[in-house]
Length: 190
Ligand code: AMP
Image 1 (cartoon, rainbow, N blue to C red):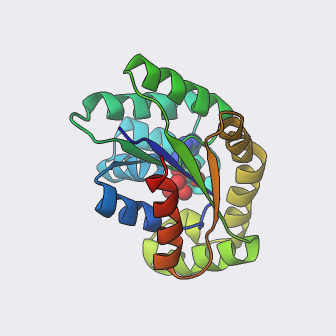
Image 2: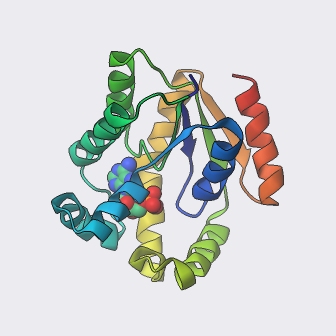
């Protein structure tokens, strides 16, 4: 089983590369941002809870995110493995993920981090905001908050996997296909 964490700041291209990884390796996509947006669209209590945090570009509390991921893993049968996109975003989430996977006889194979300069991230997010309909993609102040939250709360997650010898970094600027080829080379080495 192949379980990957696709890591990087907002706008790094995690969603785009996830689609390509899924197409080639048949993994189950687990994007916590997508799951929250689904709850929002369906008007669930979880969606209502998450909305305030998401609209501000803040993180939804760990216990809420962890429970949602645990439910998704428990209800996904016969998976060849997961690609975790936008999760874990805190060290507490990374520890919880390790614990829930090991309970199910699974583990993280590796983390692939996409590195993109901040100026390019902002351009990409604002461009996506023209069509994504996402409130958090449309205002520079919110985008700045999301990048700052990434630097303060999420970046330590990279060190967490580095300590486990599972960290791989790739430059996330250039042609989508070429970035994917580098990701595939890492995956093929697992
Ligand atoms: P994303 O689509 O990954 O950029 O996530 C959009 C928003 O959903 C984030 O800005 C957070 O408010 C929330 N979110 C998604 N994943 C997480 C997570 N792992 N932990 C906390 N909040 C999250």
